[in-house]
Length: 113
Image (cartoon, rainbow, N blue to C red; front, side, top):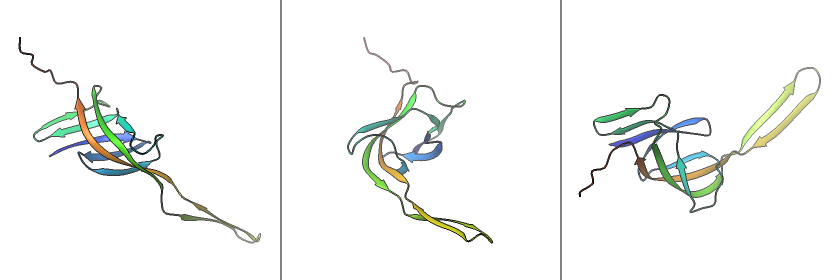
């Protein structure tokens, strides 16, 4: 099982290939490629690479599937004894990203001469 831990928007996500993740909004249109360069951990079967704090030459590639909004939440402010009440709503801007591949540039490739 191959997976990685990536950081985007100040949050950490465990991602696998061909998985769709919902993250905080990033710039781009549907179909655009996106690269996550902050990889904290990369696990490929029995081998593990742990970053200190990140794996410098490892990245995760994905494609933006959809730009959307999250569920609406109510934010209420109430102050006792002053007749002050205010209710507002908020919908978080989100991006749906499909993870396509892991790029590990630290491995040396053999060249045949």
